Amino acid sequence: MRKSLGSNTTSSSPQFQFSMTLKHLKADALQFLDLSTSNIFVDSDLDITCVIDWAFASTVPVSTALITPGLPHPRDGTEQFLDLAFKSGFVADRPHGEAKLELSLWECTRRAWFFTRLVLLDGLQDYYYFKELYTSVYKPTEDINISVLFKTAQKEDKLIELAEELADDEEWAPEILKYEEDYFAIIRNREKPTAKEATLIGIERHAIARKINMVSGVSQDFVADHRLWRWIEEMKRDRSIYAT
Image (cartoon, rainbow, N blue to C red):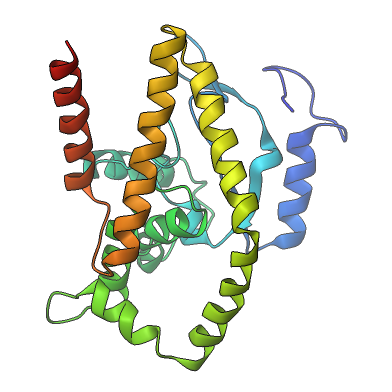
């Protein structure tokens, strides 16, 4: 869905339709949830001329719409100077007749970013996102222990019932294992150094995934943070050295 620069705005224009939607929603804001460098077009002066794939747009709270867009992908965080530049540009471009946005809306944007990353299941550091979000909301006086927090919550009646419901899914274990085998088989087919090397790549990744899953089940305090990924990279590097 796109509208070429300079074309007439008609009732068939997607932009016009979205404008009509906003008119009826009034207070709700529209956000492009999948905004990335793949669907933004700019001219030689870096002015945006077209944004495509508006099917991913959705109404959101105003504070969520004010989140500085992360590029090249929405999951990417932004530096403070980019947040300030986005805010100043947004404020400067607003018509003088419009009411100013409340300061509290801007103050909630960082919190909204953490929440969005968690609920969209598209984050790269969920543990860090949750800890920062929890600290921002509840403002504990001491450093929060996430493991203890989760263990305490697991004793609540509603979560006990949820755990029992999820346990029923274990009867699908053979089917899940088949999905896993198919997934890593696809990886082996995509990686094409040689047939033997490709097979080893798939086996290695499968082994790492199974190992992480096993460790997380043994230790409730296990966190897959930067230390784990650094260990994996060192292990793979050492293996390649010894192999040669």
